[in-house]
Image 1 (tube, one colour):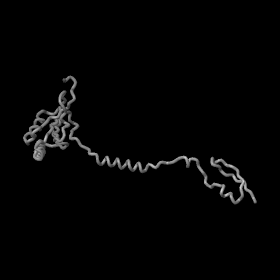
Image 2 (cartoon, rainbow, N blue to C red):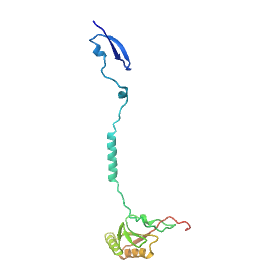
Image 3 (cartoon, rainbow, N blue to C red):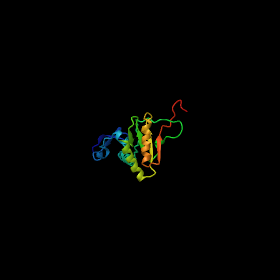
Length: 172
């Protein structure tokens, strides 16, 4: 019987010489080429985690309500050292009086007559409707007084004037 000398990798991938017969050579030789990097590194599939994260982001964006505040950023409110700012009162009609005497109800520019119509409609549906008049500190007193007068003429029981609570230097 003929013997063959074969180099066979051992468990640590070192070659080892073995003498075998032709009939059992095939069983000794492992035809796979092993790479140490393939067996030691496992990849984590994060696609399902990303799916869940995107669904959560969409859910929170869809269920969040964005409240648009009715503030005109070009108005500088007068300040006081006592009291509380009335511009944060909930469920009120906000009238902004700019320094040039123009009026905004919410964020819509309006005239004094149009403002009266809007407020009259609101007081018919809610007799306890409150109105907040926010006048720029450089606006004329007459413009703010006209807005307050228009509110009381159409039946508003409570008209408030907005001011900034932070105290100015030198004023107690």
